[in-house]
Image (tube, rainbow, N blue to C red; front, side):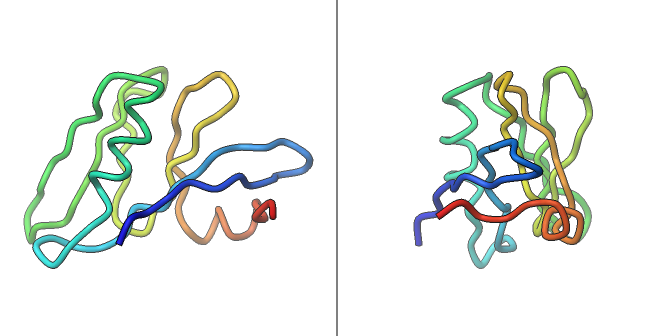
Length: 97
């Protein structure tokens, strides 16, 4: 299954976002996330922690941000990336059709 990004709106501002899904070793969309992020920045670092939880460490202005399965990775207008938890994302953003 190939993941894709969509546009989302927050109080009139549009962002591109992708949710990190799946768990190793059964499958995850991490390669799709990496491909999307490579369009704007250096390759992010994938880290497997205790219990095989998948974590993506996102370099940039907000050094050390960690995206875990279920989190949303947001690409802002300045092409920087950030991480937002699913519950916060659902409260703040709506999909643009």
